[in-house]
Image (cartoon, rainbow, N blue to C red; front, side):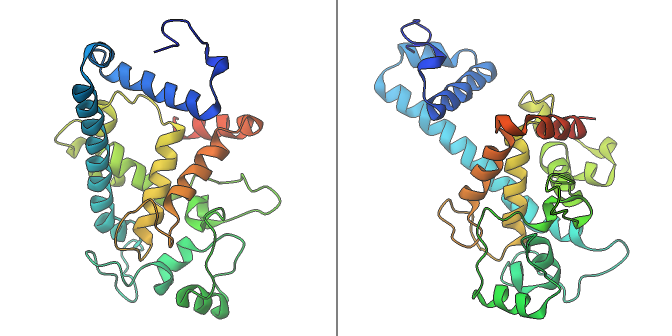
Length: 254
C-alpha cells in the first residue's frame, strides 16, 4: 500500500518484502478487483480473502500431489516393460530409497546408487541426504557432470513429463494433447511461459512423489520439501547464474 501511495519505493524493500510484493502484483493481474476489496473491506473481509487464497493454493497443491502419486508410476516404468518389484499406486511405503527405481532417481548426484553399501545406508536411514544435494531425476539422461553441474540440470525427462501432466494435461505427457477435454491449468491461470517458480514447484512435487513420505508437509524431514523448493528458487533467481538460467528458460519455452 505504501508503494502505491509512493511513500516508499521498491529499493526500500528487503528481498523477502520485494518477493511478496511481486506475488501481490501477480495476484492483482489475475484478479484486478482484489486491490479495491482489500483497500475498502473490513478486517473480517480481508481475513476472509486471505483464507480463501490460502485454501485455494492448498487445494490445488493437494490435487497435484494426489494426481502425480499414481501417474508417476507410469512415467518411471520402462516403455513396454515393468517395474521390479512393482510399486503400489496408492501406498508409498515401497517408494523412496526402498525401491531400486525410485531410489536411483532420488539418489543425490554425488553418491553412487550402484554401490550396495550406499543403497543400504540410504534405505535404512543411516545416511540422510540434505535437501541441498540435487537428486538424479533433475538431470537429462540422469547424467551429472561434476565439471559443469549445469549440464542437463532441470532438463530431466521425468521433470518435463510431470510438468506437462500438471500444467497442460495428463494426456499431453504422451504427446496426445488433442485428447484434452478441458482448458489446461496454465491457460486457466494465464501462464504463457514456463516460469522459475513453476519449475521449482514441479521439481518439489516429483521429489515428494518418488519418496516414501505419506503426506506432503512443510516440516517433512524425509524429503525436506520446503528447503528443497527454496533452494531451487534461490539458484534460479541468483543474478550470478543468469546466463545458465536464461538458457534453461529458453529450452523449456521452445
